Amino acid sequence: INAEYGRMNCVTLLLGLAAAAGTALPWNDPRLIISGRFYNGSDAALFAWPGVSFHINFTGVSLTMRLSSPKATRFAITVDGRARPSNTELPAHETSLQVCQGLAPGAHSAIVMLVSESTTPIEFRGIDLPNGGGLLQARTLPRRIEVWGDSDTVGFSIDGPYPGSGIRSEIECLLSASSFTDTSKTWATRLGSHLGAEIQVQAISGIGVTRSAVHLLAPMPCHGRLPECMNQALPGNGTALWDPRMFTPEAILVLLGANDFVNLFKPTPDQFITGYRAFLTQLHQYHANKAIPLISVCAGSGLPSSGGLGAGQVVCPYVRNATAEYNAESGDVLAHHVELPEELWGRLFDGRANFSTCLDHWSVRGQELLSEYVNRRVSTILGW
Image 1: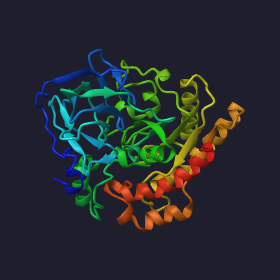
Image 2 (image 1 turned 180 degrees about the horizontal axis):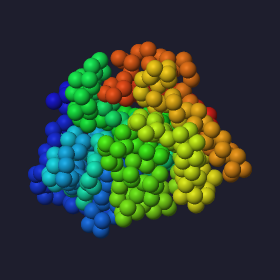
Image 3 (image 1 turned 30 degrees about the horizontal axis):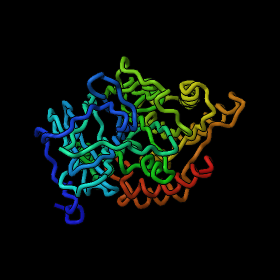
C-alpha cells in the first residue's frame, strides 16, 4: 500500500463483492455528473470513449460503483483531490468497483475516469453508499471543450518504456502498450486542468481523417475515419447516437491527420485538405452552426523519416491550408491553427529516449512538453 495514499485507505480495490447494506442509487441520479459521451440504456449508462469520467460528491466512509465490462478496463481514481498513484483495473465480467473505503465521516468527492480504450461498451448501473451515507450535488466546471483526436489524445502507451532499436523491441512494446495507455495524462486532459474546463474526448488510436494508419491491415471503428464517428455515443456504433444538445462546447480542438500518412496508400495533399476542411464544416454544422472556435493542433507524435519531417509534422501544412480554406469559405475566422515551433519539434526528436515510447508515441514527459506550448496558445486564442 502506498504510504502517502494509505491514510485514506482507498488503495485496496474490492471487485465483484456485494455492497454492504446501505443506499443503492441509480446511474441517472441528477446529483451525479457523467463527463463525456454515453448512451442511455435505460437501466445503465453505456460508455466506451476514453476519458469518460464520473464526478461523485457524497457523505460516508466508502463508495462503490456498479460497473461491468466484458473485457478488462482501467480507471484513474481521484478522491478528495488526491489521485491514486496507479490506475485501477476492472477485470472482465466483474460487477462492481470499490472506489474507496475507510474514509473519515463527512463530505467527500471522487472522480473516476476511463483511461483505457474499449472496443465494447462498459455498463454503469449506479453507486452504493454505506448506511448513513448520502449523495451530494457534484460540481460542474464553468467551461466546456470538445476534443477530437487519435492515439496522442488517447494516451496510447504513454507510461511505457522507450523500446530502443530493433523490430523485436518494437513488437514487445506494442504487445504491452495497452497496459501503459492513460488518457488522464494527455495534452487534452492537461489543457482542461489548465483552463478549468470540462473536456469531452472523442479519440481512437490509429484513426485518421480520410483513412487510418495501415488501414487495410487493421479494421477500425467508423471505417478508420473519425468524421464518421461524429454523432456516435459509442465509438463505431451507428445506432447508439449522441444528442449534441447534451454538451455545447465553447471551443473545439482537433489533433488529427498523422495517421492518414502512416501507410502505403497515403491520400494526396488535395484529398486530405478537402477531407479536413469538410471535417471542420461538419463540426460547425453538428453544433447547429454556433460561433464556436475550431482550433487545429499540429503536434502529432512520430519520429522524422528520411525526408527530415516527423510523422506529425508532415500533415501540418495541409492542416494549415485546410484551415485557411475553411475560413475563406465561411467568411469568418472561427478556425485557428496551432503548430509546435521548430525548436520544440527538435527538442522532442533529439531527446526521443526521454519523450517517446512505443511506436514513437509521446511519453508522459513528451505530452507535458507539448502541452505547455499548446496551453499558452489556446489560452491566448480563447482569451481565457
